[in-house]
Amino acid sequence: MAELFERWFGVASVRWATATARNVRSIIDRQLTPNIGDVLVRELTVVTIDEFYAQLRRRGRFKMIDSGSPPAADFTSTPGRSPPSARSSASVAVRSNMQRA
Image (cartoon, rainbow, N blue to C red; front, side):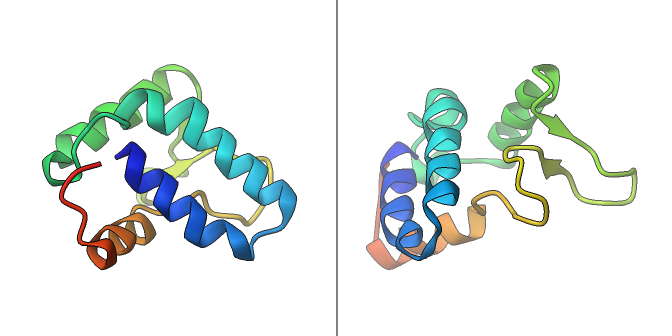
């Protein structure tokens, strides 16, 4: 996944404000890569993601909006901004024909 994060960041960040790029870079470096960076893209499962979210919740870095809503990661302090999406990352992986990350 670490390679995927880097490729996605390289493609996506060119459109962002400097502060947004800095915030996302921090998320990748401090949260994503240390926790799931060594997971191969083809081996990423719902269980892996659920375990990662559970770690974030235990550390107070993840909160549920309400019982009927999907989870929202509290990664940035910018209201209305979404954290990097798995869908965007997955599309980079597909376009890049990545077999491992």
